[in-house]
Image 1: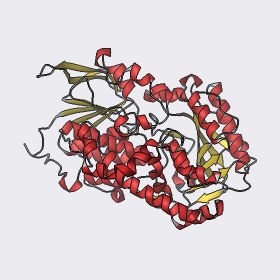
Image 2 (image 1 turned 90 degrees about the vertical axis):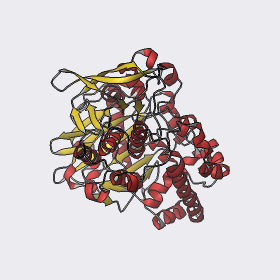
Image 3 (image 1 turned 30 degrees about the horizontal axis):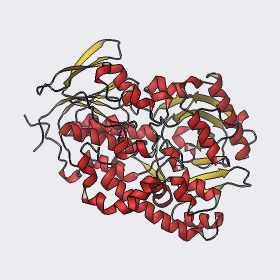
Image 4 (image 1 turned 60 degrees about the horizontal axis):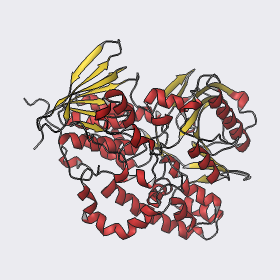
Length: 532
């Protein structure tokens, strides 16, 4: 039996907000989404200049099952909504002082590469990836789709059965787990770099996250034409088709509460917001989902006594890294680069320590470079390349903001200049700087200003042991009934797929569904919207 329809306000139209809004609208609830920007997607930003179209956020399409699951719940499919392209080369990796880069493929290609990097490691990789696949399935079945609201979640037979296998993976680090199996520095870096996707480092990420290597080395890497902007637009389109109202240019200014019937704590009553024309609005709500940085939402929309994610609590948390982003329009082609490219320095541990401790970066640091024009001709004018550089940096908003054509704050532009020069040297593109016709940087303060990101973090709270799974900030308010949270600062964590799952957790909470696990598309019949 479905619950009575509710008035639900979702604050934020990033992937978690769109996920929850779509699911609740499909179930017949009256859903209003408030998004302060002029487009959906949240931190998956977009920039258009002089014929170039840049994704300024996520760019790796991983965990395809999660996308397929959400679209199935919405009565559609990935095939209907997106145009995916499988990349023939997962990514190209440049190692400091190495004569040539190496291309990292999937399956047998990955095995052959590891044999080249470390003779005899092919069989070790087979075992490593088999265990990674098992860990991935365990995470999907027992951890990711559970908000751990009830302590008894940890006592489920499925978890208890695997405890002997899980406990060492939760207690040990990813670095140690890899180092006991592989000796080659390049091999260790290929297996350890996914920790960056989790806003952490291999030494601080639980070994359980070896499962990330299953995603790129076993499943392979795909790309949605149009980038993640196309994914966000498709999700928004489905949410609207089920009746959700998405207000763009809308800024939430407060959550109104009233006394709950049980008298124990207040409950949400409405959301105050300012529309795109600057008019004050007031929308009644039975439930509110804060699909943005949880600390920012509490501090700006609620009085201090109603904060769940308090300043004191967040001061003890690891915000994860920020980043300096650089969007470059390049004239001519760049055959030296693949779609995804990773540049790894030898001072791996020092590199991560500088980021965590807030120290300045070296002139050469580990960076990520994306060339989507390798796969998607629509992102650059003919005869040009679209290049996006991400330099992991300390979560230090004081570094400032970026800007067009080198006009950002000095600390940001210094890092951007160093990244251009490093890419030029390592990829052997001597005239790279002279071929730049569009340049736009983004700095840590931009993440703080545009998204309310805690300390200017680029991804969300780091996935350390005490900030993973049930130890991550909660999806439910402890002080206000009917207030829920979704996104990268709460459970289950960082990344677009995780945000989709977080949106589903919030939608389940609104509907009063306490059972752990993913919703069943076969049993997720949408409410008949024509019914009285």
